[in-house]
Image 1 (cartoon, rainbow over the protein chains, first blue to last red):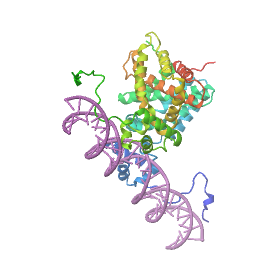
Image 2 (cartoon, rainbow over the protein chains, first blue to last red):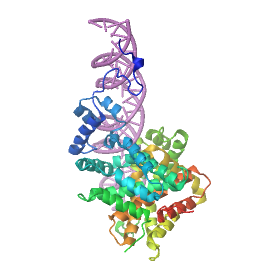
Image 3 (tube, rainbow over the protein chains, first blue to last red):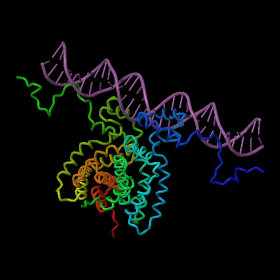
Image 4 (cartoon, rainbow over the protein chains, first blue to last red):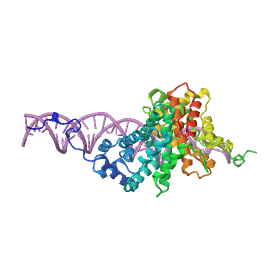
Length: 206
Length: 206
DNA sequence: ACAATATTGGCACCGAGTGCCGAATGGAAG
DNA sequence: CTTCCATTCGGCACTCGGTGCCAATATTGT
């Protein structure tokens, strides 16, 4: 007796139709090589598509825009960060919890570090990507603001909750820029220091 | 005896050649009307040029991009902010000075407020402009970071100085969003409150 | 009138991104 | 194996932002 389609569990739907001819990850790899060689601006979507052996039209089915190529699985990682926030002890002060989670969120396997560095160099140094990043970071900010709101007992739209989201993001960007400008220095340390400054309102000390 | 060219003062050079057929300000007015009517995305550069009675090519001599139309004389105002920073008493704490200057920088004549509101609605709500704003804000951040650096006695590239620039900008954006979402509320008050929170590291109080 | 100079705007071109649609692919059911 | 259906592919044509080039036009000084 053959298995019926309706017998299949909901969470493992049957695959019908033509299979995808590549993956986001594969396209990303191909694109990064071209970006490395020719620069981001000089690399056209046509170039990437040709190098990946797909049609230009198909490229835009894998990525909304050329800009989005450099963002990898950023969105998916946000769920992980949200979980980390949920695990924080309830008595821990807001900014201390924020500091720990954000630093942890930006910890990478040593083997991935050079890769991550190239990614962030693109995002933070190429004007088009620098601009586009604002849109990607919105989700990141939302996660932070959400956590801040619950800790402060206010609505997510609250001024302070949003300010925490924006300020934390800003400090992280400063840290990342510093990290890019100083190869060899540990990213976690920089982030931790910068977030520590934020938590005390940037008071000058001796 | 006729005045020679060389007699003219340096700061008032002689005008030769064809006169500009319009001004940035005029183009801005025309464009804003179209943005209001049709929305930013739906308004093409052709539309603006036609409405202003100039060629499309000419438009791009007045503005680097369609995005730049909404920024008015932003760059010029930064000089003013730099001066304000220079006037701050030397014994005033960094964040307190920052707070005063930034709030003052964002004070507008009541007659200009509705205009400014539309401008900021565009910048903060239209995705393309939201993204582009990152590039414009870089100069603003630089001014703040410069001030922070001198106050902290560090280099402008210092992590903390840059973090102050980023964080202050972020908090201001949160304040602006709040202002847009709550018409009728005073912008200065919101900015002051938000920057106050930043200065104390967002500690929860009763 | 003439020379020098600055702006204008048309034209052609490039690259990102989109709607449309037929072709290709592969699993499922008969 | 054949048919049916779902899904992806990729070419084509189009829109729009933006740029390089260059002749036409306007304005002022000599």
